[in-house]
Image (cartoon, rainbow, N blue to C red):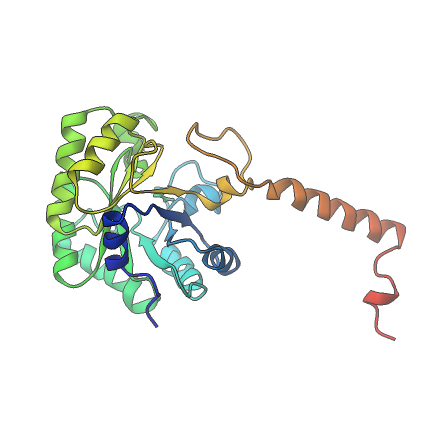
Length: 263
Ligand code: KIV
């Protein structure tokens, strides 16, 4: 069953100046929460590597892992458009591999689109995927899969290159483009110059939409968060406090009470 929100809806939203809210999810319960809250796009990000697997980078995430997580997320989404992130080396090696791997997401899960990282250098892959009917969300600027090539997670400031990458992915057929780690003024120029929606993460307020990692937004992740993250809830604190109360009640015998016991 296709989701209520399609890539055509996103074009219309850009035309109407209506902002698009995208959020990552990696499992069924959180995807259901995001969907019920009215999120437009759920991205099953390869940030799975950092957020769920506790790795330092996204490089080790596999296709099988992404297919599994995309399946359980997409089963929860009734309204949002579900986008599956193509992991490192699942599309860079050849267009044939890219089509086969992207095809898995649409055949084995209810995702309606894929995302992949890169600008001009991957435009031939974006073209090949869209030609066989697989919608692609592009991703330019700071590319986490190229962390070693970039020498770390650095803000990207080469305006000419970023504008050229954005144009290339649009021409290749991408239905939208994630702008990551780009100064606000450059993102504004890119957004102005494209017909497809731009979705920013650390790219300022003038993008057509924003994307965040669910665990950052909900305050589940620990450690130092990037400057662009805004924490809208503190689930970690309430989870710790709930579990501590449970431990205490088990130890002092107040749980289970009569209400939680069978007579
Ligand atoms: O993997 C991911 O979560 C992402 C976004 C945050 C854009 O690529």
